[in-house]
Length: 316
Image 1 (cartoon, one colour):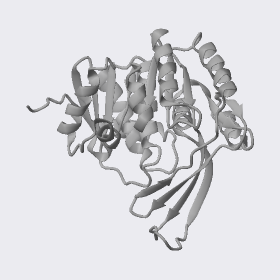
Image 2 (image 1 turned 120 degrees about the horizontal axis):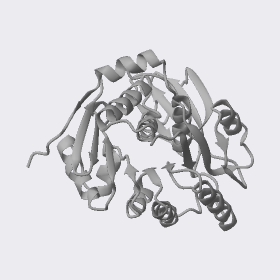
Image 3 (image 1 turned 30 degrees about the vertical axis):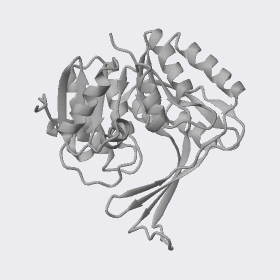
Image 4 (image 1 turned 60 degrees about the vertical axis):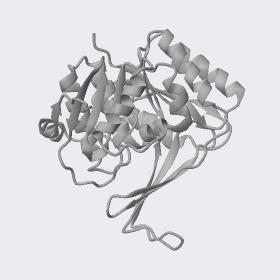
């Protein structure tokens, strides 16, 4: 059964101030050649890509009352239903500095302060949406006032309602959320290493770490390793996708694009090989552009044909 309806949840959105410069001079003046300010946050990025793929997207989370304009404009542009809960204060501005060599420095601010009343309003919205939606993407960090345990409670409740929760976070939020049985997680190799508490130096070590997570009854574990590729563990079986070499413009949003591709592929009932090929190609194309979005269909098809997919067998 296929569906087009999906909810993306961004609990701690941000306005991204992105600047391009030759190189970052730490402790001194750096001259930015070009810049942009746009509505973002991991779940918002996922929503934009899903909408361009053809999904009927509802967006929710917490949004500051003082500066919602760029978000409202984006949601209109991508034809998403806006179910965000507005709270006191301003949505944070995060700074991303993109150097000529593709290196990105993120300066992330803490975000709005969420009250108990805000939480109750959000829960009302979330579980009303659960009556009519089966796919939920929870992506990004948590604002002040939302604990990792509270976020995990929402995942657990959605799981109990037989909803497919795709969860993409890090640090304490990831650790707590993993105990709540999300349907799909997508840590990158750095987030996975932080969770297991040891460095992961190659794909084999990432596989071993992912197997430790499989004991938590998470149906789909996807590990993104940048240009090295994407690994997917499902029902005890691994698939590995190797993307073609891309000219890297910016890696911002590549992980969010992968999540959107994985979500859309499942929503459309793609077989596993096609699904991983499609989402890997979509993510690979994301690094060749600034901002998230689906490029031309012809370019996507060309990139899909260049992705290598194979089973991976863990060496002992």
